[in-house]
Every structure is written in C-alpha cells, then in structure tokens.
Length: 322
Picture 1 (cartoon, rainbow, N blue to C red):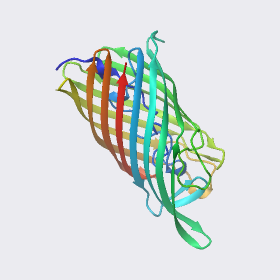
Picture 2: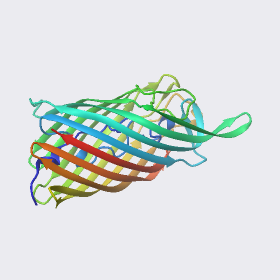
Picture 3: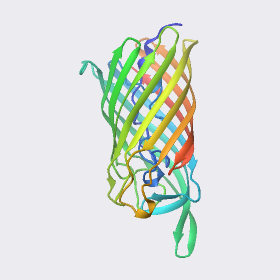
Picture 4: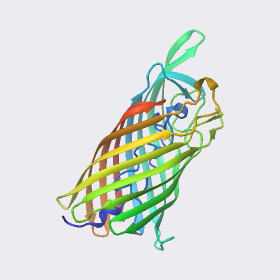
C-alpha cells in the first residue's frame, strides 16, 4: 500500500458537536432535556485525531439526529416535564484549528473553535389542568459555541497520543418553557484523551478515546445535569482508490452518567442515563502535496439507552489541512 501522511490530520472531538454543542435532544446520558453538549461518538476515527503538524485545519460538519423516548418516560425540558419526547435536529457546524510551530511539552499544540447553526423540531406530552396535551415546537438559530483552548498530539512511530479540553459556552438562544432550544443555557467542560494506531504499510488504523463531561447549573431552571463518562473506538482500513485512499470502518460508543442530575423535582430521583451504539464509517483521504483533504460519512445507531432519547446519528465531516 502507498504511504501517506494524511493519517494524522484533522482535529479533536468535542466540538463538534454536540460535537459540537448542538441541541440534538439525545446527546448526553439523561441530562436536562434528555440531551447535552457532548454528542456520543463524535471523536473516534481518523478524521477526529488532533493535528500533528503545524498549520491550519478547516472543518465543516453536518449532523442529523432523529430519536424518541417511550411515552411513559418523563424527561425535564426547559423547566417542564415532558412524556413521549420526540426530536429531530439538523446541525451545520463551521470551525477550524491552528497548530503552532513550536512543540509544547513535546507535543503538537492546537487551538480551535466550532460554531453550530441548528434547525430542530421537538414534541411531547405535558400535563395540564385540563389533562395531557401534545405540544410541538420548532426553532432555528446559532447553538452554543465550542471552544478548544488546548489540544495536544504526541507522535511515536505508528502511534499517536491525544489530549484536549473542550469547553461549551452558553451562547445559543434559550427560552424557559420552550421545548425546542438551540442553546442549553449552561457551561460544559470535557477533558478527554486517547490513542490511535496507524500502519502506513497495510493501511490498518484503530483508535480509542475517552473523557469526562462536567456541567454547570442552568440558572433559569436551577437544574444541573450530572457528570458523564464517554468512550469511543473505531477500526478502519485504507484502500488505494484513484489519487487517494478509500476508508472503510466501524465505530462504537458508550456514554454513562456517573452522578445524578440535581435541582429539579425530587420525583425524578437519580435520573441517571446512558447510551451505547455502533455503526459503519465510510471516507476518502486525498493527499495534495503539503495539503490534505479528508471526507467522512458515518451512521451511528443507538442500541441501548436509559433516560434519554434513542435514535440515529448521521454525520458528514470534511477536513481541509494546509
């Protein structure tokens, strides 16, 4: 197989979403709205690795999510309790990274930012004095800004070690009592680390990343979503195709809430959540001299959930490194 230096491009996770930070009412494990800033499975493959050479990385991302919860499941959303929550979300993220020339602690050091624009529809049943009523809200607008103040990549032969801090800022539109909100109205902090292996001889790649997500309190609802643990892994095979390489792979993720939500009505109890899923990954890597272009499509199906929506994530990621 032809060798290429494109195996090490791209950025780190967290931001993406939601990756970046979109309201895709299904993202964290439980959490207010059955969602959260971190999107499960957002940092797992070649295209998600921290940059390992100086320069710029431009990365647009499209994310579609569609999921629902059982009618008997009660989930707090923007200050109200909702049964049978159902949500559809489309998110367009624009962002980029810059990697400095001088190594820091022996690592390639990058900073980045991601800004999402969200289109969403959310519906569910709420209790009123006149009985249960089905409510449907739609909203669009900028979501919460994702900041990556530190992203580090250490290279050691075929191995790459990554570490980063992702910060989600409550800059998106939010309104109490509205089911569909592009913003979540609280801060989240996601330190994460991982390792990847690239065999330039036979084109085999594997990666494993994990981290923690800490959330602050929503000042409008006095609700604080619990801390999450997330783990993502992938295997990919690069196959020569035209002037570049076709990538075929499989990705899996697991997210578990390890501390309970707090501040809402005690009837909800611990309200801890989890999700796990699996799906195929298809991509293309095109070396362009000192520049690189990478595109990737992934479909991730949630297979085991608790206290959250269950559905499908469809990603389209593009990376241009120069």
